[in-house]
Length: 268
Image 1: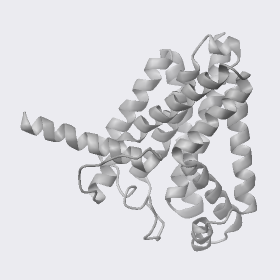
Image 2 (image 1 turned 180 degrees about the vertical axis):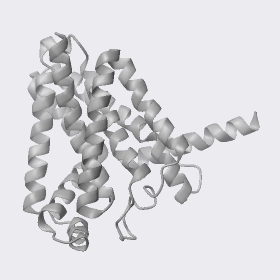
Image 3 (image 1 turned 135 degrees about the vertical axis):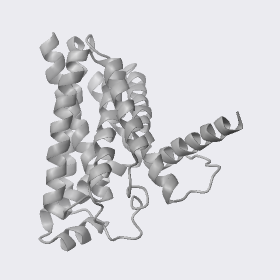
């Protein structure tokens, strides 16, 4: 009984740590945070995605009460950015600044660590947000909303995109030499147990909101997407950085929304 309570408390602390890492929500972790704990918290990143997706959907429902749906959708996106502190968007912009402006791996890494936003990063950020908005806009049209809910769309996007991004830790080397990097102690390792929890969370969400055939099709798209992202990062850096994980999340989220549009359109 005492052992079970200890295990439960440990897992709760890991969830709180994941929450503090990916959001601006203040938490009280009653344990000493070390490298092992930071690594193990990765199992709950997809769960945090469910929370962020739920908050975004609630923001949409709230603002849709007195505003047009397209404007309410913008507020839903703003809610997710405020909740995460634009954590992933920052990674997306940094990756494009580094990959676009750097010639060597060392040069790319140095550019990515620069806090200033360059032309490549600014353009990439504009286009990814525009794509996300347009993809969500066509998904929430009445005919498609009859097939699924806004809540399901946001949860699928935020949860599964974090599954893809976090899974890269399992079979890619970490290449940043920045000792002050926030993600470094967290992204060193993804244990088998953490990987299974991560996948189980994503699969549960898929099966909850989508029919079996759509689930299989979307899984196929995500596996191909993960392969492409991994090849991209390996070619550019020979591995990944924390910024790369943020970029993978942003790209995956947009691809998920576009894939849902295609799948739901075919089912009508």
